Image (cartoon, rainbow, N blue to C red; front, side, top):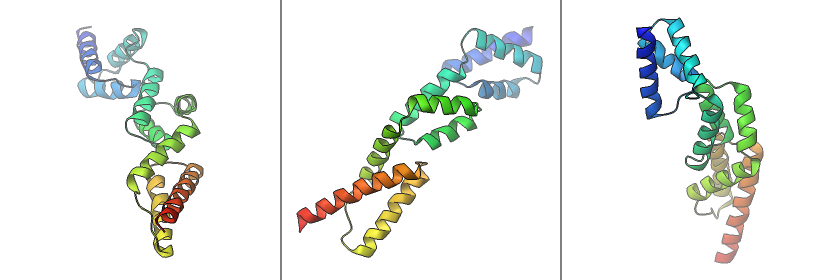
Length: 165
């Protein structure tokens, strides 16, 4: 019983600093105690008190990483899987909180920051297009979004070159 109270206090202290998924909290408590029954009891208590909730954690994580860190849906899903969130919950939350239009806007913003000027030579333009594709692909955007964003960016570049000439 004394071990349960100690684990509860440690869990509450940890939750006071940042949010945790159920899996993360379980791992954290396992570093403190080897008593699986006590850990299970604390996890159940935290769930009953609504201190742990993977659904709200997932929604907040998606919102934060979409708005502040400009992550793609794939990168967000990978981060949530690493934190122990169920795949079905991730798919459902991403479907509700991250539209294809938002992915397009974020990818476009990233490209606008990274690629400021067009290339005038054909070979350099092809290399630049490849760099754009790899840049967005490395950030986890789908190929459909990447192709759409690159087409828009290349059209902007073509207009810019026409205005210079």
